[in-house]
Image (tube, rainbow, N blue to C red):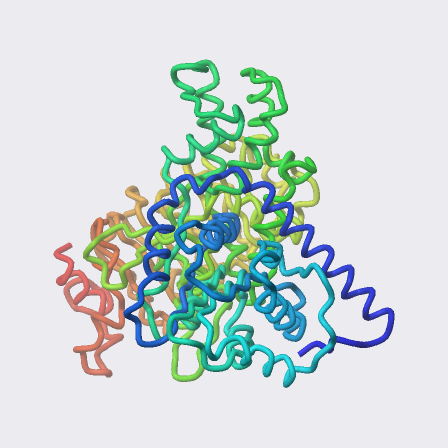
Length: 585
């Protein structure tokens, strides 16, 4: 816990930190001020009904969670000021949890607001500030002051932007027993925090999601023209450019109102809007009017622990709007060494936990491909603006390089993860001048294969992912046996592959082999040498990802001594033979 007093230098630092945090919040509030909760009417109504419910035997904690920029603060501010709640609560306090977290200052703000006369009440507390100084008190004294208000009065307390379970535990421990009709509203970016805060009433958890297209368009037009406007009827020439801007905003209210506010002061012409579209990534970073968008979203990235930052930045490998399967990501992360087995869980199980944690933190968005999935969430995608952050961070650290049309080639010699886009049309000379093959740890190809993409110089390669790549032929895999560190090999959907080379047996580190959707009907005898092989996926590509057969599944009914024996009929491993039978190849 940080002290409330100290040397003048520490005090100055805290003052600057508070001022910067306050500036961020005020700027965000100003950006969202005119959103008028477009598309949020239902969730507002539900929360107000819950707050007015007199039948609950204990006080209620209501949690609202979602990624940064969705308007959680705007929503609770609107609820806090709503006429429906007027006169319902005898005492009110609304505070934002500042960074760095200072418990004494937060509690002092709550006490000050609870102690205020009705005429003095306002929403300034929502910004975590107070209009007058509160005499310095220690935690014990602040707790006593809180008890004086909370024990007998019906109170409403809003805690905006709690970042972790520890913060909630420290705060709630200082709030004594509250009157049964009292309410606490919490906002957070993380589902796990929301569930922790509302542990006693899981039905009180509300997830805020991106706006639907209709509401996004309505908010965008209203922000630009400051009135209700129907673009298709009144400004048909702007519709195409508006759609491109809204696609980049991807339903995020902060982005919609910020960009809309910027365009409101620009000429409303196709040329002006096209100019923004063509340079929107640079504008988001360089334009002072738009930089708040990235600043708010950056906060979510900055709050990630190191291991999740690595997993998130890895998403920069995939194209815009790409739906990456859960199975694929988890096994690739495992192959990269991002997870380690421990506490009774395998490395793959831990990587799967990482996947769910990134979803819980709204860094990746769930996408369910099949209602028959055993895991529920089969795949994910990344919000366009969050993806911009991932690309920027991964490029800065030479982590991921996406080789695509018109890409910048500066300083890309030491990249670790190479992703080749379907629109790159360069030749072998250009490719070899860009890429230092000896340093690449993963190669992912989207679109058409070219033989020079792979080389025996790729000595450090751990992941070779050619899922959905066209034009891959048997002889293109002749170097495979020399890439001794490969742990993940996917030829999924490579329809022109009929055989794997015998040199596959040299890949002693191989963990996952995916030949789903190929023409392979048997594996080379050398497969028995792959003692670390955990997953073999084969058969036809189905909508249901869970139909893919894993080696542990087909091995479990075989005697241990038989598991790596060859089938006399197919000259393949016994496990694969069983797999073929099960998949009716």
